[in-house]
Image (cartoon, rainbow, N blue to C red; front, side):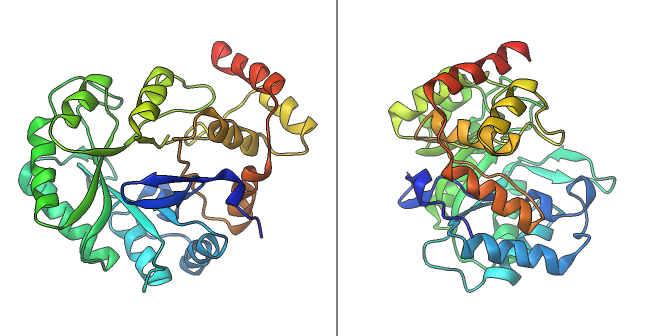
Length: 289
């Protein structure tokens, strides 16, 4: 079993979490829709993650929908005291597995209550408001959506608020409405549009959680990454995770998997250390992408 203590911890809201966490998205069925192919295996992965020291799990009620949250509750409740569960609202699933916006005040309130019910909680640790103005970050005011979520926070249903799939301007607007504890955007070794944003958030004490840290549904493919991994006796994905851990101390990782073997590989990334020469070599991956 791998220890993840070497990756350090970070204050997420009022709780300290280990920087290498776990994302539950892959526990749902194909295309993140429907039940898992192997229910017992999904339960086992969640329990192994916590037993290995993970205390930050990322999820959403629109994974499935409802599937991953119900699995988390079945596997882990009553929850360990140090476990922080971060969820997302702002979207829903169509009957054809499509991803649809769902961020009217009524929909956001319903989503918070659905997450509470399916996770078996009285208050959600962190809720990320996912903005669905476009597939990627798309400009537009988020005042109405964030004001609705802040009202749910004032009612005691949400401890902390984060933002997902957002632009720099939306983060600035959001910080004027509510305290933002984390930002969750796409970022990895090859996709580095948020380089400047990560550093700005670090100075402000705000966590940055990259989604698709390993490249998305199609893993990163790079001869440079493969060469570095071979020299370090590691997998390319372990190197990609380690690069993110070394990118900035405010980066929190949530790699997902439905396999205990892959979970252990991911957690072992905390044991790696990339030299300055290797980091410079890996910087070329983004330039070639």
